[in-house]
Length: 214
Image (cartoon, rainbow, N blue to C red; front, side, top):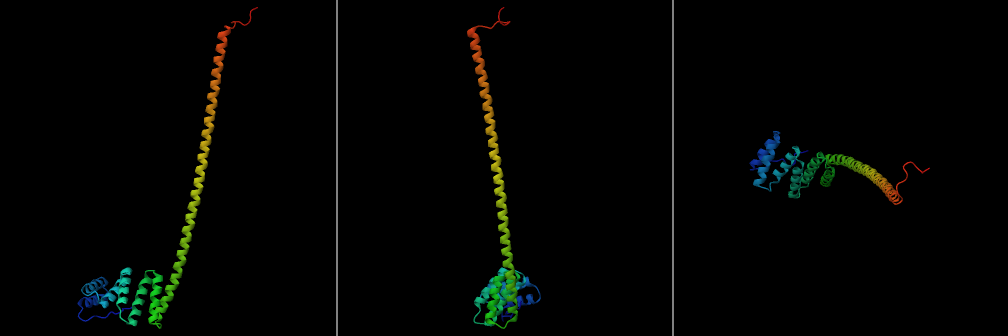
C-alpha cells in the first residue's frame, strides 16, 4: 500500500507530528495526531487520508475504508489522487477478505489510470479470491443444507419410532383391559352360579349325607 497524499500541510502541527510518528512506525500516535487534526479542521483531507492509511496498517479496516470513502468524496477533480485512494482502499478491503468490494475499488482505480499495472494485478488476484470465496460459500451452504436434511430425517425417524412405541403401549393397555374385563366377567358368572345353587338347595332341601337310601 502506498502512502497516498502523505504530504505535510503547512501550519498543521497535528498532521506534522502524525507524519513523524507514522515514519517512525508509531502508528497509534500517528492515528491520534491525525484525529486531533480532524477535530480542529474536519475538512483537512490530508489528515483524513493519512488517518485512513494508518488505520489500514493497524488493520482497523472498517474505519479505514470509511475515511477513504470520505476522502474520495472530498477530493476535487484530482483523478490521480482518486485512483490512488481507491487503490489503497482496495488493498485494505482485500486484506480483510472483502473481495467483492476490493474488486470494485480496483476497477475504479483503472478507470482513472488504465496503465496502473499494480491495480490490474491486484484486481485479478481479488477476482480469483472472490471466485474461491463464492465457491466456499456455495459448498458451505450445501453442507448446511445436507446437515439440516440429515437432522430432519433423524427427527422423522425418531418421531416414527415414538409413534410406533406409543401405539404398541396403547395396544398392550387395551389387551390388558380386555383380560381384566374377561376375568371380572368370569368371576361374576361363578358368583352367579353359586347363588343359583344355594337357591336350589334351599328350595329342595339338603341332599342325603351318604347318597341314596337302600
